[in-house]
Length: 276
Image (cartoon, rainbow, N blue to C red; front, side, top):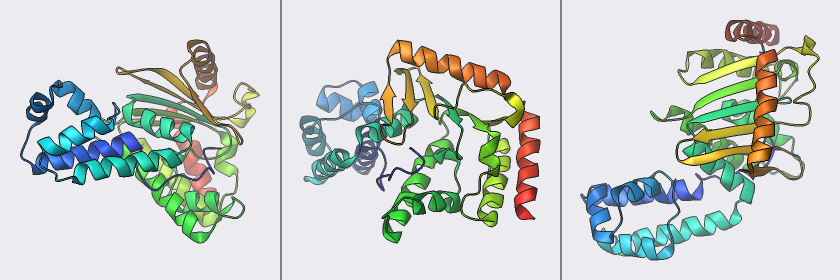
């Protein structure tokens, strides 16, 4: 599951190289349109590479390196990120890139708090539960998870709609203190302008989401996509039929979920229970 899979301690490879390109360009005193003119690209394409929304091949990296006077530094960074990318599970690389590109994310989680909303201690407890994981690996994975959450702090970050099964609020993870902190964090997210958390009550009798967690992603520069979570084979799909089916499931869950205020009240009550 996405909740316990190890995460590389780096950004999505495309986004990582995009950050390096931006740093070298600014250091060289050039605007995006300046670099675009030298390379024969449009400014929008340079912008997309820097945002991690368009891949860059070695020829592009080499040409940009020369144009920016990087003396091989930028090209070396491209090779590093290419090597990093080779170690990512395909679905995880795709999910991280989707999170960077999407302007709307819709999440359903029947078992645990989604990684995007986890506190460090909650995430640490999740990773400690995976057999044969060393303390060093746990800390690397926690750091990577917190890094992925930075997408929520971007000025142009996605709007995130989350539906949690009520059992997520009462399932013991880590300790009472860990759960109390996690519930308080969920309650505090009500102040975030782009994060909306709803709870599917236990008495809904709904079975629509019992098959597993999923994420729906949409944005103006990407097709509608779905991430389907499984303990053995998590996957990302843009197949219109499958995405349409997941959308239908999400709408059913959303219609049965408690309203925002009632969800917040329930989360607050659970925070108090864990404190005591």
